[in-house]
Length: 354
Ligand code: CP3
Figure (spheres, rainbow, N blue to C red):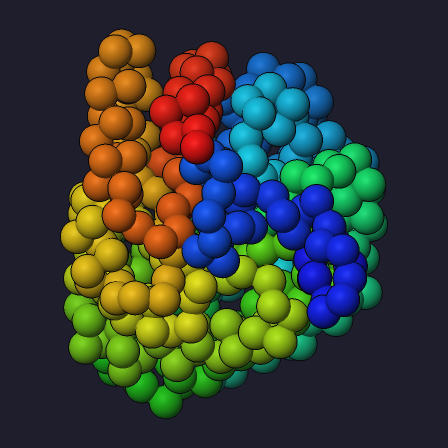
């Protein structure tokens, strides 16, 4: 497969890509760059192909998924593609009644709050997401040496949508369940870990060269609660895919106090938002892990000079790291000027060329 370099065989161009080398903490020709949410509404070509097609339906059409995934690679010259989908796709695939509402996010019809509600969560089989296998087949053929990143939502972030019934600022129902019924909470997270593991395996077996676990909202938790109530489920996911040897990236927002534990949970690469400089993040994560990040996405709304100055700060803080994958500290915003992103890729590549 494109991912592995078995002893005695010539490593593939994908295996030797700057992105995968940085994830493995090997020397790189330049710091690799990709952007979370690089596909999507910031691109006019995305808006055009998505016209009249609801978000979840677009995730189930292999040719459309492949086209949308390739759009930012063609436009920005990023070092990796990220599979176009959403964190709720595997839940939809096992029959959870949910939708993605434009401008809102995932909305769940019958929130999970009792033991009986767990019955909504059956095991995921590869057949449930056959369109993912098909789309990744199309993509690996088109991408050539550019690695494809598969992804899934982490158990806590998925639970937050399922328990709240939609996006939430304070996660009140989620925390009520976590603190108030620890056994039901543990069983819910364990179910989600099984589903997430199965979904990541489908992507890796189809040809994804790395995976990212998005625990976007886990920064809402204190470290002790993370360790007790969330980390076992996330570790279960990382362990389930460890045998493939593909890099595992772990990302969340507002996770400054959790960075050490997020590394300990089993990631090879820890994603960092813009609140902690990368040299400090490296001290918190400890040795043996690469870091990904961490330009404040809002910087992209300022002048080219300001973007370059802030990018320089990120690169300087990353100078002593063993492995650095440049990214934003969170996703691309829909109103961003895509040309500013293209310039940013070029700037990082030229500044770090070795
Ligand atoms: O990064 C990429 O280019 C891949 C695409 C991707 C999407 N969702 C497409 C999408 C990825 C990686 C996700 C993950 C995701 N989805 C996360 C974790 C990443 C993060 O940002 O922290 C979360 C929390 C979700 C849940 C979700 N889905 C939200 C909050 C929204 C936005 C709602 C809105 O309209 O503002 C979605 C919908 C969604 N997912 C869109 C896209 C392109 C927008 C829908 C559209 O284009 O019509």
